[in-house]
Every structure is written in C-alpha cells, then in structure tokens.
Image (tube, rainbow, N blue to C red; front, side, top):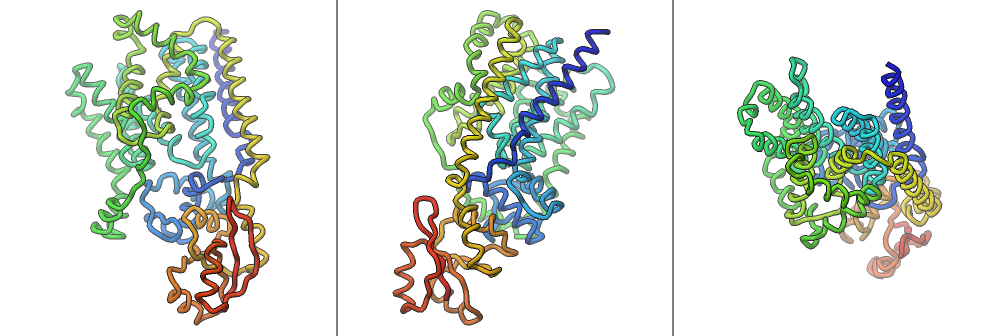
Amino acid sequence: MQNIVKDKWITIFFISATGFVLLFNLWGRSLENHGYIRYAEVAREMIRSGDWIVPHLNGKIFIDKPPLLFWLIAIPSYIYGSVTPFIAKLPSALLAWVGVIIIFLWGKKVYGRIEAGIIAGGSLLSSYQYFFQARLAKTDIILCVFVILSLYFFYLWYNEQNFRKFPFCILSLFFIGLGILTKGPFGFFPLIFILIYIILNKQWSTLIGKEFILGYIILGLTVLPWAISFIFRIGLEQTILLIKENKILSRTAPFYFYFIQIWGEFFPGSIFIPFLTVYIWKEKKRVWQSKYIFFLIWFLTLFISLTFFRYKASRYLLPTLPPLGLMIGGIWKKGFKFLIIIFLFAISVWHIREFIWIKKDNLYSPGMTFIMELRPFLKGEIPFAYKLDISTLEEINFYLDPPIPIIVLKDLNHLRKIKEYKKIFIIMPKESYEDLKIRLNNSISFLKEFPYKKGRLILTSY
C-alpha cells in the first residue's frame, strides 16, 4: 500500500516536472526563419481568409502539409485574436508532453518498475532532437507523438485479455488518421508496423476482425472528410497538378546518414546504445520472446525504412527515439540516480543554449525587427512587394499581419495598373531599386533603407 502511494506521488511529480521543462520560456524565442514561421503564417492566413479547408501561404494554395497543425495553431489564435510565437509553438510543446507521459506510463506498465518509466520518459525528453522539436511550430514532433499514441493503444489492445480491449484498437487507428492529417503518407508508418508485427506473430485473421474493420472506418472518417472537401473546393485536376508540382522532398544524403545522425539526435540517450546493442545480441533468443521485441521491431522497421528512403533529414529520426528510450528503461536496473543526473544536465544545457539564442533574437528574427522599423512609414497602408523571395514574404506577412497577403508585383505593367488607383508603397531588395528607378524614369520616391539579413531592403512610394 505504501509503495502504491509513493508511486502515485512520483508519477504526479514526473508529469508536473516534464510539463515545466517543455513549457518553460516557450514564449521567449521568436519564430526565427521561414522553416519555423511558415506554418504559423499559413495558420494566420487561414484565420484572415476564413478558409479552413484550403491552406494558403503568401496568398497561394499550400499543399506541402495537410492542415492539422494549421488548425491546432489557428483555433487558439482565433480565440486570442492573433497568431503569436508562443501560441504557434504551444501545440508542439503540449503534444510532446503527452508523448513523454505515455512513454513513462508504457515503460512503467511493461517492466513493472516506476524507475523504468522514468528512464524511458527521461531519455526521450532530454534527447536533443525531441527537446528542440517540441519547441518549434513544425509537424515532426506532432507526427512522432501520434506514432507513440497509435502504437501504445495497439500494444494495449494486443496484450489485453478482456472485453475492455475493444476501444484501444479504435484509438490506435484514429491516431494513425491524425498522423496522416499531420504529415501525409508518413502518418501511415504505425499501420505498416502493425501489419508487420501481426504477420510475424502469424495472426493475420485479426486484420479483418471486427475491431480492425471498425478501426479502418474510423481512420477513413478521420482523414477523408478534409481530403474530399479540399478536392471539391479546387477540383481534382488542380489537386493532381499541385501534387505533381510540389517539391517538398528535396534533401538527399548518403546511405549511412542516419547511422551517424542517431548519436547526436538521441544524445544523451545515445550513450547507452552500445550497451543496449550488446545486451540484445547476447540475449537475442530471450529478447525475441520478451517484452523488448515490440520496441525492437518498431525501431528496426522505421530505421531501416528511413535508411532506404531516398530523401533524408535528421528530424525524420524522431519516431525512432521512443522505442530506444523504452528499451533502455527496461535493461537499465542500476545507477538510476546517475541516469537522472545525466538527463537533468542535458535538459539544463538545452535550455541554456536556447537562452543564448533568445539574447541574439534580433539577429535571428530579421523579419520582426524589420516590421517594427517599417510600421511608422506605412501609416496603416498595406505595401506591395517587388522581387522579394518567398521566405522574406512569409516574415513580412506574419509580423505585419495584413488582412490579405501582400501582393507581389509581377512586372511593370502590373505596377502601372495598380498605380492607376492610388499612391502605393513598395518593398524591394536594394539591388532591384536602381534598376526599377531607371525603368520608371525616376518616378518612384525613396523613403527608407533597412538592414535585413545579409542585405538591404528599400521602401519606396509610387
């Protein structure tokens, strides 16, 4: 009885402490560049336009990612009144917290020791990639958590022996659907793993059992309403054309890329990978029949798939980190306090590193600084853009927050047509100013030159 009460208080403390770690100073750092600000800007345009079905970026249809993250950012932002860096990062942080809690509870349940759960959850939380992705407005950590949830509920369904197991299968397929709504085809991974695991255990019939059939229906009901609505809105031909033109996957790397990256991405947990490898090799016969096999197949299935996948990025490793943490939690039975010290030290280092970034925020947030200096000159007017790159447009749109995205002037005819109606402000790179001035016979007026990243931007009136 005393141990039960003790475990209860330890659980409450662990949940509270991990939440504090992930939410602490989340508001301190801005959205630095287009890789982080992009999804926040899509959510902002979603609110401004009132179009919650077809995402837009800089006024153009955006299909790089499905809409779930945009919705998660847009809903609280709509209630608050604007998209802020804190609100944009909040879904990632909260879901990352859920992921750590689930891994803690999973490790505790599987190995029957609360220490195993703490090690599993602590190794995941303190890992470099998980910690920093949890503090960004991006899809990777959200997909990772949906992978954790879908496989956790599948595990419960597979191992429960009573009537209460039925909802777990439904929940597993539901979270797979949410993963697809987060990152498209990458969200199918848990389903692939489930198929492999069931086939290895020679239980094919379960795939057409009533739980799975209902689960497939739930999966379809989760994903298809948005997909059908999107196609209905813009048309099938236009949808196919946008998919063909999309070049979101472009980063290639050598075959051995992830064999190197795993050490840094899972650090400090990666310190224990050699010990885990030796243990699995020595106990391979027993491991195949043990609790470790579920997590080992999870890790190997995803790691091998990613290795053979042509396009690579270090953040794709995120869903491989939870099973590593769970396996380490299972084999590590000595030196518990030593591990906790390592995890706490790593978390402290990551927070210190972020404080350094925050101190240099003006250097890393040129868009925010630029808009603060620009606003007094605009006097409430919405400027036009000329020869600005996409990332610059994203930052200006986000921090200026115009009712409609800034219009990009395509050529001189476009400029002259707009000029027929009113005096306008134009933002352009410095190198484009002299050329445009000559072509317009000095009819544009110089207003202000601003430093921006490694170049200069010019504000003119025409």
